[in-house]
Image 1 (cartoon, helix red, strand yellow):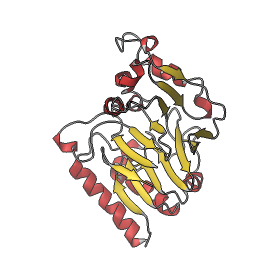
Image 2 (image 1 turned 30 degrees about the vertical axis):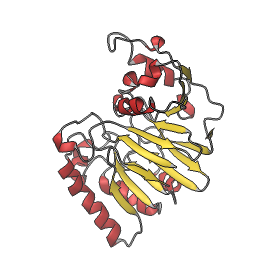
Image 3 (image 1 turned 60 degrees about the vertical axis):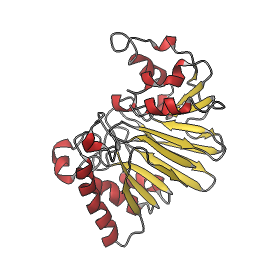
Length: 280
C-alpha cells in the first residue's frame, strides 16, 4: 500500500512562503493498493493537482473517491478535478453508512448557481454513488471500514486493510468533546489499535483549545496520547490550522515527540507534509 499526500491543511487553504514545508492545500490523500487500485480520500483543494497527475496514466479508468464529510475544506477542490469532466473515467463515490443518499447532493450543491459556473450535470465521467455493504466495503484487494467521527454535522473516518497492512485516517475528530454521533475515546483507540500508519486530526494547541473547544478538532497532545494508547507504528499529525506556519508546526510537534519519548512508547510521530509519500 502506497500513500501520497496532496493536501493536509485544515479549514482553509493557506498558500505562501510560510507554509511551503507542510503545504497549503486542504485534505486530499491518494492510496494505491498492491494491485494498482486507486483510492482517494477527500476532495479538498489538493485534488486539483492530483487530477492533473492522473491524466498521465493512460491505463487508469477507475477512481474510488471516499468522502469523510461535506465541510468545504474537504469538498472545495472537486469542481477542479479534471477527470470528472472526461468520459473515460468511472468515479465511484463512497462514504459511511449514513452518507449513501447524501454524497451526490454534497457534490452537486457546491456546483449550483451562483457558487460555480459549471453544473454537476455537465460532468462527463461516469459516476456511481451506490455501494452494497456500507459497513465494510471491498475495493480491489482491500477492505475499507468506516467509523463515525466526533465532529459537528458528523462524518466518517476510514480504516483501509490490505492483507496484514492497515492505514487509519481520522481527520476532523475531536477526542475531548462529545459531538452527536461521535464515539468514545476508547472506541477510537480500539479502532486504531496496532495500525501501521495513523493520520489523526491535531489542529490546536492546548492554549488554543480553550477557545476552540467544540469546533470539531483535537489538540496535538490528545491525538498523540491516542496514538500511544493504540500502539500504532507511525502517527502522522494531520489537518494543520491555516494560521500555523511551518515554524509553528515544527514547534508544536516537538512536545508530541517528547511525550512519546518520556512514556517510552515506540510510536514514530511526524507532521504530515504535502507531497510526502509513505508505504506499508
